[in-house]
Length: 353
Image (tube, rainbow, N blue to C red; front, side, top):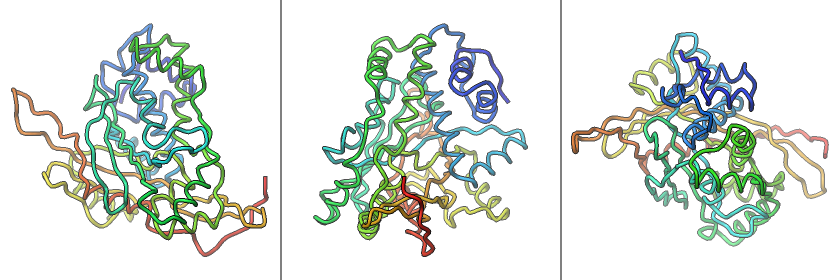
């Protein structure tokens, strides 16, 4: 368990309040340098850590099975090593005010010290995945796996539906936030009050930026790409967060005994050094526009929670770094976790607002 009064804790206290701040630092493993950093400035690494902690907290709010798992870990005295969060984007220009594709996300990651760490073609999904690692603490601050869907690889009708769904996108990055991003990119740090202004904007980037989709468009997207259908309802929200564990096979067996919604198989990378499994996606209620202008609610797949074991690389120059790579085959299997069903049969009309 970890407690502190450093600049990370001060930043989280301002943005979330002391109670949430204490819990986050108790739940998650944080590198001792980041915990102990006294400030007075907030380094890009501390800001990246704070962002990941708030995104992780948001994922737990949306995935009950994950929240239950974390509560159990805390009760057992075990902290969570957050390995990576995954985000989905659409490689399409003119999405309202939002930049196309991965740039909607990477434009805020670069100033925080994130560098491209790998490119993963996801051909069956007609997507491309890219991992980004934080340069100062690559093994200790969670990576981001940012995927882009390529609409031009689908039917004309699908492309038109994507364009309609995303046309209302707004940009959460305000002019003030853009200025602060340039400052942290140049100086590699911000004053505490500046970081406290920027952090909520960074969190807002990882959300749905467009309005509720039309039900007809959603159904068209679902027929060709469950991944794009997911983006239609969830946008750029964190698709999954990941616990890095010592033995994912052992943990998966334990979770099955507890009747938790863990997938049947553990996926293994071609190198054998990366092994992954996950909970089934949470079910969430989302609103859709009907042809007559009314609104309707449907149950759809939401986010989920993943588990990963990473082994060390072969020794080179006296070092054995952690294998921070991903695997396209593993990624294909993990993507299915949020595509395990479409809209539920039972729908209910919602009041239009």
